[in-house]
Amino acid sequence: MATTPDAAAEALVRVEGLTMAFGKTVIQHDLSFEIRRGEVFVVIGGSGSGKSTLLRHLIGLQPPAAGRVRYGDEDLFAADPEAQARLRRLFGVMFQAGALWSSMTVGENLMLPMVLFSRLDAAERERQARFKLALVGLPDQFDAEPSTLSGGMRKRAAIARALALDPTLLYLDEPSAGLDPPTAARLDELILQLRDHLGTTVVMVTHELASIFAVADRALFLDAQEKTMTALDAPRRLLESGPPAVKALLSRELPT
Amino acid sequence: MTAGDADPPAAPEATWTAAGKGGGWTLALAGDWRTRADAPAVALPALPDDSKDAPLAIDAGRLQGWDAAFVAKLWHLLQALPRQRIALDGLPASLRALLELALPDAAPAATPIKAPSRPGRLAQVGRFATAHGAKARRTLQFLGEVLLAFGRLARGRAQMRRRDLFWQIDQAGPRSVPIVSLVSALSGLILGYMGAAQLQRFGAQSYIADLVTVGGVREMAALMTGVILSGRIGAAYAAQLGSMQANEETDALRALGVDPVDYLVLPRVLAMLVVAPLLIAYAALVMMAAGGAIAVVAFGVPAAEYLSESRDALTLPHVLIGLLKGTVYAVLVVLAGCRQGLDAGRSAQAVGQATTAAVVQAIVWIVAAASALTVAFQKLGW
Image (cartoon, rainbow over all chains, first blue to last red; front, side, top):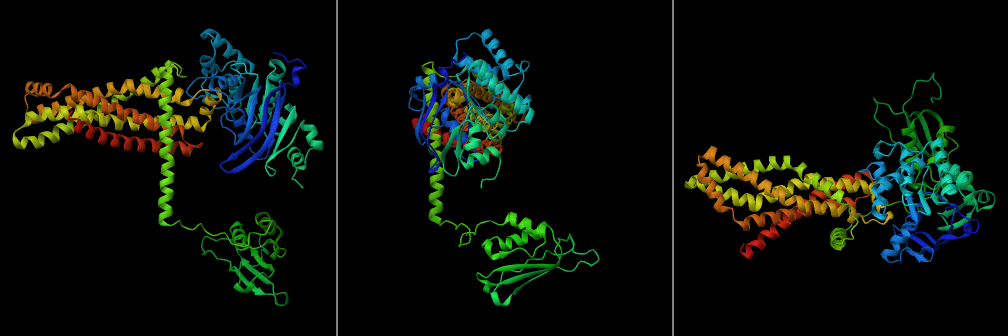
């Protein structure tokens, strides 16, 4: 699944004129950007800037107030149910607290998507699930209950579950929130390895500065004041020559 | 934080004085303002009415001691005023720093914040109606989603695992038997005892069998089972689905393209459709046995006579009506639990509220359905 240099520039997701709103309150308007194959794309911004809501739009949980989210040529929200189901196979999602299904073991969590959406037999499903768990560094937790895992392990298991159906694109909601720095750093490393070795495109929402500089190829900045995206570039370049609000966020200084 | 340890702490004092020429006012603070357990709290004097927009200063030269409660009092006094009116330089450095942190930078809006006015009677009625209208709409929408899910199930396209169905059957059925046994036995005893006590006055004890059989099979077994299930199953479903909602577990299903109604609600409703008739039949049998025992033991009705009377009273329509009613109640319980759970907010408190709402809604629905069905069967002459 390694990406060729030519394919690197190919847009996987195109967001066009997206407007987010809660009722009549617009949070962000007219967002247009694309997510390219093989990159680590990070969404940054202050609290209330709509980062998590943007993620909910991208994964089709909530239709935007206006605009389109396109995978290839297809609009996720306008697609018929069959096409939508096909588009959903393109991505896996890790929710902020992991959101592992608590009534099942970790292994069953990984196998449920395969039961529902693949034709693999039981033995193959188990092999796949064990492999994905080993990939995220949890080879011994196949039979564990989610409630017995630590916060970091839960997030890893959730990443493994997001990878269950071998998606092209991985969405991560605040992967390092609530983790101690070494655990967060190991998670960053895992994200880079997934991109390098599986060719997975990664989109993550975060405000962990260390993560942003460690993993992001490009960062999208949502400005809570301007109510739109004001920058999209490599984090180092944003720090050097981005708008003041982005610089402030990335250098942890108070905006002047 | 006392000014001098040698001085004995003096009583707290505060006075506003006009500063003459500039028209400014100064608040002179003196004494020890620390809160003491053995002395009543002292308030700061309000701003003089005629101070208008005059600048304000504070003189804390004779302030001997202060604590957080004092800062709060001072903050409360000053927070509604434009920041530029207040000069804080007379205060000790740490006290001043705290106030500068807490006081707003910009001048507050000219009009003070008014307490929200109480809406009029008519507005209250309107708000109540719209709020409940929205809830009722959401319930209807949920019922529609469940019907659609059944449609998909009929076409073999529902995303439900058979395993979950069996698991739910086990949870709802066998595990409800002990409590159903207990409550049904006691209801049977009450039914037998109350009936016999009345019928005995006419020497008609042998009709206890009719009363217990018809009352138990046709009404009581269904009603009691419904109420038990609303506590045992409805509450549990609301809590399960509510916490799944709070943990984004239902979002994880949706993101995968799995409809939570298919995956979570369908197996629960189907399990109840299987389990409810069995539970109700069992509850009716226990009631009849308990009522019979009372009649035979306490009121001396011959057992053979009781049995034959019972058999005559137990007709197919009674059995079918009882089973139908009970199954309707049980399904309403499941729907109320799932509806409240899936609509719960994203917090622990919301899960608790959903659980309460599920039980209340289930019981209201049961009573409404019981009335409607009783009247309907009466009109039909069944």
